[in-house]
Image: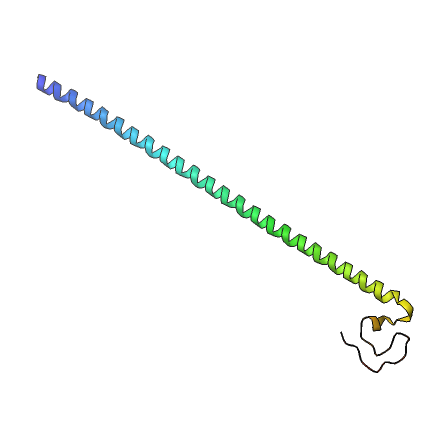
Length: 115
């Protein structure tokens, strides 16, 4: 009778140990899965933030370049308008731009100007 009882107690202890080991393994697996998911989410968020920042920087640089080019064109247009509209000392506007065959005093010139 002692042998059967001892075997039963040992079986109960072994079953309890198996349950504890399985529970510990399940907890460790759940913790590892949660940590991996958190790391993946953090990496995805960081990548998205970096991409958005780079795109915004590129857009801002292009916008600044476009504004600079527009301003430069406006300044050049103003310079051309001032030079053409000024006509200092009877100079023909087209002669200032070098596209006519007239001299400074409106007399025909022998050579053609080119741009």
